[in-house]
Length: 169
Image 1 (cartoon, rainbow, N blue to C red):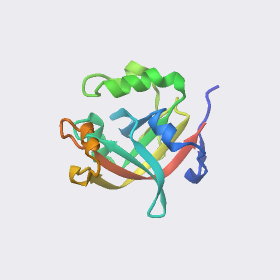
Image 2: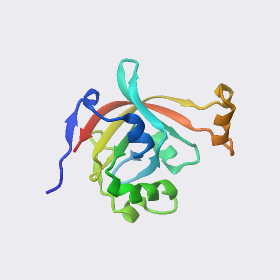
Image 3: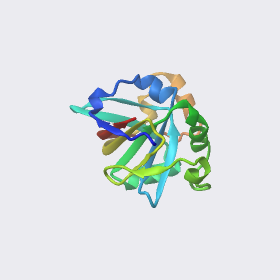
Image 4: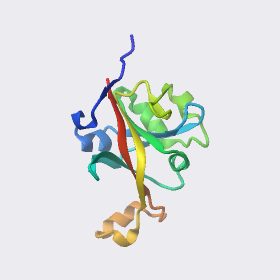
């Protein structure tokens, strides 16, 4: 019997966001069950902004997932147990333009409440409605060392998404 996702208030999520994103990684996905893309990310955050629970993510414009996040009102962030690290690594090192990441990893997409994508294997799934974005501007870097993250000057776009659904297993 598969584990069913339980909907909780995002304020009840009892996880260390730094470890969850920075060490365990997440899959950022956008699109529909018929046309989607997903990518692994280890940069981002969870918190409160404008009196709303939010996720903020960073995507470089050349990433295939960028197109999907741009074209859709919602994106999702899914977190997995360690046994899925190989799948997460694959999704972070291959482009959806070149391969079908879903087929290659065996992850099973399921429809989120808004019609976007979660993964059946995820232990935590967050659905987020885009509410703001901001392009990273290197003029705002206060430490020179930050620029080393951008040897190609391909600065991320930050998206802020209000968490509209939080599911856990």
